[in-house]
Length: 569
Image (tube, rainbow, N blue to C red; front, side, top):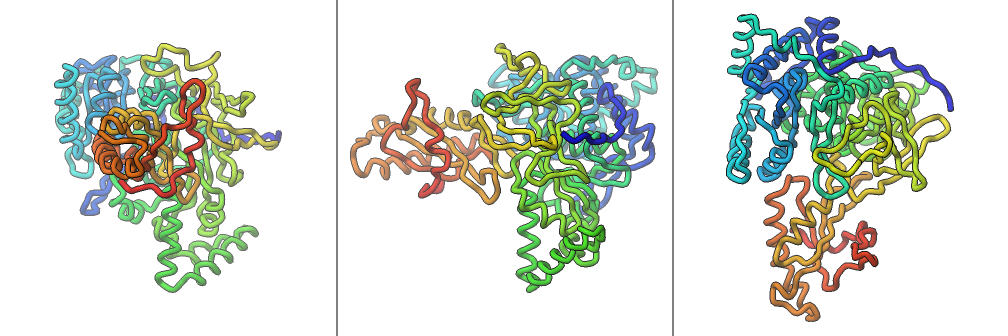
């Protein structure tokens, strides 16, 4: 196996060390930026980020939240990142929530994590209030709400920051005196688990610090780089690749609050690096090709891409001149795209490189903080997810499943009695192998989790339980419908109705058709209680029970690719 040189990266003790180091090295440089709806730019320096975190952390400590758990929900924003760092760097535990979760799902996760407070961005104030009220009504638990406001609106956590500044002016140094335990849990990240119930991954400062070092040793950014944070900010992938690592390198992170703002943000921030999932990679390419076709420039684009690719092979980059228009879709300066979260068709890479944009893949899992491997800027294989980071060791069992060990591997799951790790090794549920050059290749999954092509992971059992709770459904199997890439485009359900409960004869030729409307109504009702990406799009009604094993488990593999002829919900 060929050896290679790592980037020289300073070892961090915790996330407070990350901010202190970056503020020392890049004090007046812009760390974070936001664009208002009126396209006004708001920027925060590294020095101010460090100070805002100290002030907000002081306010939390003064309010009595030392050692407590604080939930966090909202869009990608400086307010979200400020709250995150203030909580973890004050010795508390942050519990980030997916902003797409339904109210009932947020309540469930708040109760399971036993949170004491809920921080939210300004735009998520109504959702936060509904969740807090529902938590009190359903579980008898009360949480304090903290509105983090909005940098772009000029109303950033005004009350809390004022409280913190007053305390510091009075000599309150509680924040500085907090001794962070690198092995203490600082984040509980809910993700899909093998049981079908989302699990709370327990991550520590050491987990994150080691993963920052491991990732930065392989992928090189610089203070001249700008990223746009567009992936959901509660994801470990976005936190690590889109925020933590860029802040280590002194980059500027511009926050995109939603997809409608993405074109404006790309034009305003003009990123040099983007962290994306396959769905974005596919969508950008499709838009570029469609625009060329509609403008009668298909042949011109094809020629320019071919010429650019040939010239790049001899070290000449003319993409800015030949391909200025398609590059303009990304702001005109993009040089690197790191893709993760789901499998990516390697055929996309040559197209992006012809535009002067290097497209590389990485692989990770929340339980590993999350990066396990990543291709390098100048050393990559398009059909691989790269080299394994130094903070992780991998091995493969007899089935080819990838097991990971090292300082970035989680301590365990929230309230999980059974031992998850085996002698410190975590079973990823993914299948793969290392090639002769040390590059990791993912060949499949041995878990039932459905990976959508937008990077979302869905455990079908969670939805199946909701469906079978309906009077009309006896059995249900949820599968992913194949999309354009390697991921699934949407969810589909095979349903065996409870014919007796709905007063129908299963043997009747009209039984399936008669049951369909009742099943559709129940699926729609279940969908309303689920996050958008978990909703069933199509379904099929069958008149025979599912084929099962001797232990009465449905033979799911017989249905995985069977989505033809289904009815839309």
